[in-house]
Amino acid sequence: MGHFNIAVDGPAGAGKSTIARMVAKKLGFVYVDTGAMYRTMALHFIRLGIGPGDEEAIARACRDVDVTICYEDGAQQVMLNGENVSGLIRTEEVGSMASATSVYAPVRKKLVELQQELAKKADVIMDGRDIGTCVLPDAPAKIYLTASVEVRAGRRFKELAEKGVECSLKEIEEDIRERDYRDMNREHSPLKQAEDAVMLDSSAMTIDQVVDAIIRIACERGLEVGA
Ligand code: DC
Image (cartoon, rainbow, N blue to C red):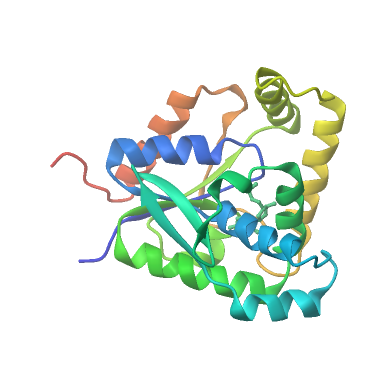
């Protein structure tokens, strides 16, 4: 029997990971956070002192690196050459390095293979930028989750303020616009809505409404729950 996979794509800050994690919990699916894998690769390049523009060194560094994931209490952990780096990848520095280095084909090839293997082994909800278009083109349920730049920046601002980090709303907005542009305009697997994906704009929706909408879409596309 094949597994039921749900693909969730969308720009940075749309709430993909929060929502995908909740859907996974409700449906008993495995949540796969592909952004964490690009961040792990980025951390590897930073540690090697490689600049984001040095394509040759990046291609070389991809050859020997070992990125894998495992689960602890249901939460995804990323392993870099056997070291759990999950606590080190959520910085702005790693995030922007991930955005800059995810443009290179060798980086994508390595991680896409890993992602496809994971989707074969279990029912997964996987989030990223190219899941519906490249990684799991045959996934029965595909969601394109977005929200306005203003709403995404506002959410990020609130998140940082709650952590006591001082920041400017305007700078966050600019950063989001820049990242959107880069993710949508790169040559390899740019962020775009798959033809058979359902677009959800979460700007005026609560988290629970988005979660319910995704489960409804999955059921419409053939998922049987609580049979
Ligand atoms: O979702 P995130 O912010 O953790 O992702 C970090 C970067 O990784 C993002 O700017 C683009 C890249 N990425 C990608 O190219 N493809 C994916 N499937 C997931 C992330």
